[in-house]
Structures are given as C-alpha cells and as structure tokens.
Image (cartoon, rainbow, N blue to C red; front, side):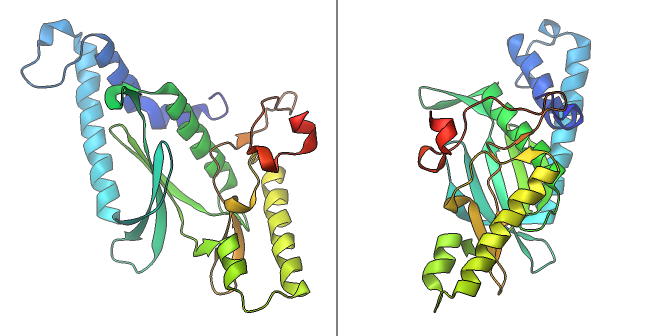
Length: 243
C-alpha cells in the first residue's frame, strides 16, 4: 500500500469518508439523525457524493458496458465500447464491499481495496510497455472500481489451437515476445508473480503476445529490492519457491 501513496489517496478518498460514516452508525438518507455525525464528516460526505456522481457520469458517458469476458471470485471483466468510437476495451469491475453470510455489506473489504490499489499502481507504472496489455484509466463509483484496459482477441491457448500450422519460427516469436514482456516490466521494477499460459493473451491479426492479470504483481521496494511473499499458481511456480 505504501508503494503508491498518491494513487491510494486519489483512489480511496471516497472509501475513507464512507468508513467514517459507517463507524458512527451510518447516515444513509435525508431522514437520518444529523446530530449524530460531526459537521466536518457530513461535509465530507456531501463532497464524496458529488464526486461519486461525477465519476459515474464520466464513466458511463465514455463507455458502454457489454458482455462479460470473464468472472472471478471478486471481479468481472466486461467488454466495453468507447462512446462515439468503434474501438473496444476490457473493463475489470471489482466490488469492494465485504461479504457476510452471502450478503454484501456497506463496508469496504480492506483486502480487496489493497489488491485494487496495488493493481492500479502497477498498471500505471507499466503504462503501455510492449507485449503488456495496456492500461487506459480507472474509475471509482461507490463501492465499485472500474479499471479500463486494452482488449485482446484471444488467449494464447486459443491462438495455438486455431493456428493452421505451428512452425519453429512462430514458436520462437511467441517465446521471444513472452520474454520481452517480462524483461520490460522488470526494467521498471515490476514483478508479475503469476506467470502462466493463462496470463498471456493475443492481440491483432499478427496475434501479438500480451501479458495480463496484474492482481498478484508488485513493485520492488526501493530499499532492499526484495520480495519475500509466496505468490503464484502452484503448478507454474519455480522449484525454489516450492521448497
């Protein structure tokens, strides 16, 4: 979380105000008891509501959500189209609320929040590096975060299965682009920590390789330049991590 304080400040300001309200019993309607909440918190809530409305208006004025491309435990990836343009993008939508007994609460899950904030920080660091799915922008609407990224055409496996032939030249090109993606992010001190076939997509007629899914990625700390956590998908972990 300390890797990108500026990003965190911008991205979680509304969530901080909402936590303050929640901790005091909640103000959820115009009929709520105003005297239970300090004036400065009420003012912050009004600012947060106005900001949230602007963000919501900005997102839906610029993008139209379409079909679901994928779904995980906490997030969905939708196909979307920029208003007034033919270009399509992928939008990762994460519900930041805590879940209790299958119901969503009006409180922020700090683990989800930390994951999203870290992912956005990583994406901003990567920018539009070659052979990485490009990051466009992010939005926060209430308890939902929207991360807008480059839309790729298919997975690496789909590309391999649909190929009429797989020549040595093609395979060399695929492995070269995979390694170029990793070299690029390492140069900006980002480690992916979940490299596996599922996290490589293909884009365009040339089926250019694109590294994606930055949920476990991290920015190397400046002091010692080391990460000690155990991350990844077991079948694809290096032997030294499984010891």
